[in-house]
Length: 402
Ligand SMILES: Cc1ncc(COP(=O)(O)O)c(C=O)c1O
Image 1 (cartoon, rainbow, N blue to C red):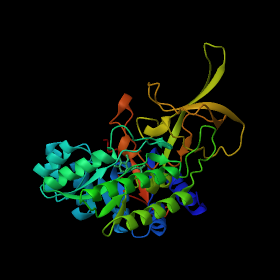
Image 2 (image 1 turned 60 degrees about the horizontal axis):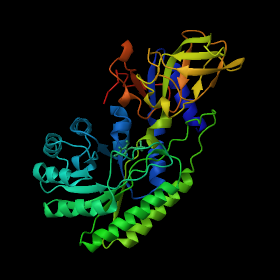
Image 3 (image 1 turned 120 degrees about the vertical axis):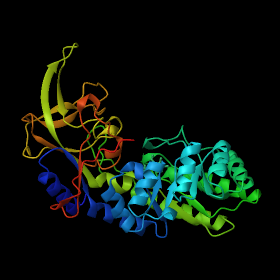
């Protein structure tokens, strides 16, 4: 994290006197600008599911981003914020007749698909719409794979887009998602090969597309590995591979090809942090005789850290800058055994007391959107969004569940 970012978020976290999630809008705007410098000309459709906070969506939309919506409720939110329908696509392959019709009524004309049944439903309830077919990837190399539920093979994509054309829809594009928090650049090389093979196969059927959607999956940089070291995804190499892939596909296609990306985590994760507090640091002897420390926090899997199983955050304990330290398992406040980091131990100050503040960094993605309504009586965290680290704005209750 850059010093600026650290300073802005630290000021905002220090200003928060109770538990909340703090978003650094300047950091999010800078991150978007950086992405546009790396992948110029790419149309960004921010994945709303990663952070459906009004201020964050507005900040991105004002810089030119569109939105990837997963339901009519998200589409309605995007429209309420002034995002035009032609900058919103319905990126969920899982849809009902009713949700397709509602999206169409709201003005959305571009839909993701991956089956002929879904295509038939789109033709019936959103006649003439543009569709793009999602190709399945393995998800290998990602810390949060998305492989099984979505996408189809190359041959199936040809069948799906042929059915779309025959049903009066516009077969417009192909998409992939290499899995969230992807850690390898090879994932995008493989995705490019798959996209290239599918474009060629489609051309054999007389179907020429106008866009390719490289999906989400770009990593955040602030998570820790299971030993507490900063993850180090090869981001520059990933961008180089994506640029090369775009160039390759552009040359291959029989018509001009536009590119779309749907980043979620990459734009917001490192620019949001949780201000929580210590419930208690305990030490107890287990049945095997070993004595272990547990640090219980006020925030966990069900009220802001849904991904704590797979991803480890850096914890900061203000006022406890030097040791002594102990190794502790870290867990959330509920009476649920899943509500804990899977990482074996974290080094925490042994002097922590109930009520001490704790900052949980790189927690801006899939936090507000994944909170329960109050599992075990723990209410969703409210959020705040800050421009400069001092003035907190939009301090309304957050906790949109999905
Ligand atoms: C269709 C789609 N696009 C984009 C994203 C965003 O992915 P990420 O947060 O890894 O960038 C997701 C995440 O689940 C998704 O399902």
